[in-house]
Image (cartoon, rainbow, N blue to C red; front, side):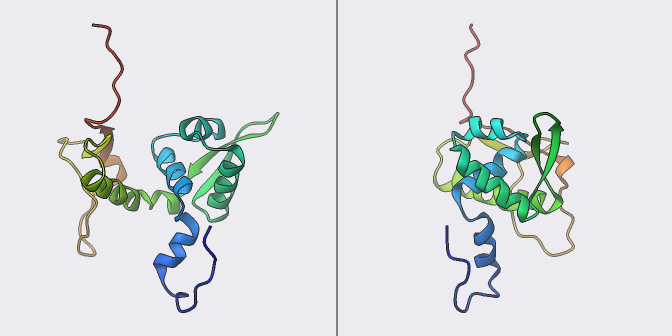
Length: 154
């Protein structure tokens, strides 16, 4: 983990963001949350992450207001982790990273973002402030050509 204060960087938003989400496991937890994962055991199994590391990252994401804990079982107490509006706003940043990785690192993207209405591919891009942007209910994440397929048995 990086140190918290950098001389001359107090007003740098990039440095501040990296303090919260600038670590591999944190981004993968956020990615899985966007894919529908919400329970500790499911994050653990999906990521193959050590329990103590997962606990630390989830606690930090809750403390930062990116996730909220929602109890789904009383005895023993068990919680799901749901993205807050602040966390949901990371969708564009996450997809910009995915898009960059698809372009420079991956021969076949595992997932594609597209508009539901016409299946047109969607990319993360800069747009003029005030421009119409797609809302979350207008887009979908679908398997890409690199997504592992199950054998059909035929």
